[in-house]
Image 1 (cartoon, rainbow, N blue to C red):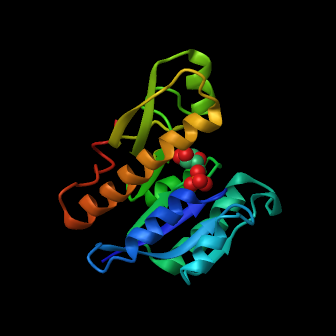
Image 2: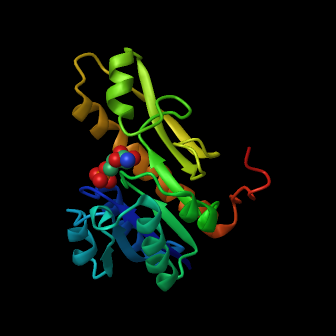
Length: 198
Ligand code: GRF
């Protein structure tokens, strides 16, 4: 049974989908804690499912590194097998990436390496592409630059707003994330060792 800690910043709809999937006794993973860099609305989902939650408020720390050190303390307490960033809108400092990679994954609402960064959906729309996508990657020291574990194309439709496109992408993200966790838990998929990562 894979122990998961999920880190969020926002509404946590992807987190909720994972929590719902973990209700299935057959699913080989459990969310043991939910963390955020702020008092995230998504904590409500953790509460609904009786999952402990912790906040490490980014604004309460003098630097990204100091924030990262406290985040590490919290993560160690839960001893996760896998850390999942699912809507964490914060770049992790190297001290966190170096301690957890490759056992730290991120979901991203684009077909990486297309449109990395915090505005992927808006950027895809502005670029006028007819399709974008969703990706699950291993977090490395770069911005959305780690090895891709799963990704799938999502169409951009005429008249799409960023919000409508993002809501079309998120269900694909959730499915890819859940499937990737399942494949890692069963050993069907193996995480790249740090040496293998480019
Ligand atoms: C997701 O698309 C995630 O990839 C991106 O922000 C969104 C979070 O959505 N970083 P939610 O908070 O899970 O609803």
